[in-house]
Length: 287
Image (tube, rainbow, N blue to C red; front, side, top):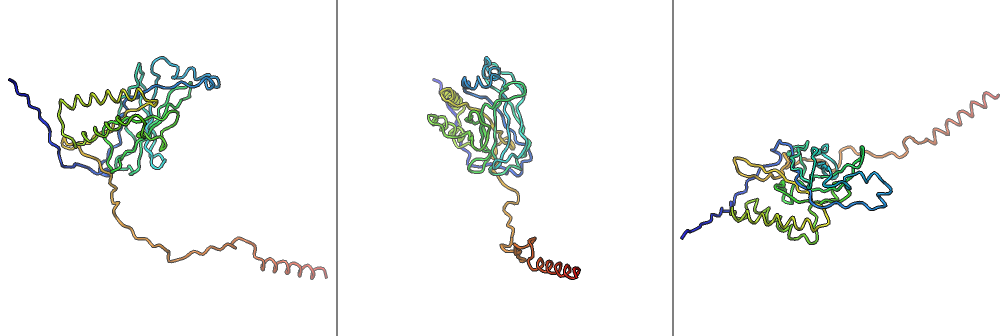
């Protein structure tokens, strides 16, 4: 009789973290796959713009799409957009490309978001917006996001604050619940069993694929990098250097500026004096 034993890793109660202000590295994001089907335009749009017939919508297989990434803060871009490299697709949109953004982790504000827009070729020198999505770089607890995320793509619009990728979707509660549990497992809040984890994550992938196919939206999978120091995963906590310093300022200035609403206007007394002087000179010259 063979006795089989299973080892279970203990949950580490230590929290390893590093401040975002101490990371002098550029932000990287991995563009994964795009799942879903594109809807073809109506016939009236095709009649008004016959060049749509030659766009990627009517191409057999997967058209040559590309993704632009840009960091925003309060709707204002913090750097220039970065585009994925060209890749020919056959039956699936699969980039698997790490994109380096021209902004450092230490320069990211607390409300920074990553806006992504998917484009398609629509003719010579023309592009067609497939859709857009966004995701905040820091979570609600001020920690930089890590791991993979499936973001909803809003069709026909560019990525902005109005296109949240983590918006609640009716009928996709199980997909969102499993994503939260996978996050807890990645952060070490659950015991890890190697053989059981492989089966579980495989089942989660199958459930996610099934729900994506049944959805009316497209989903873009992205991956955030993990920070390791001495082989230990560390969370990146937002911290502003010298942000706790207090500066004194006066509520009222010592010198008060009083507005003069009559400045640059006509002085009635001087104007009357000038008219009287001119009339007096004209009378003397007439004599």
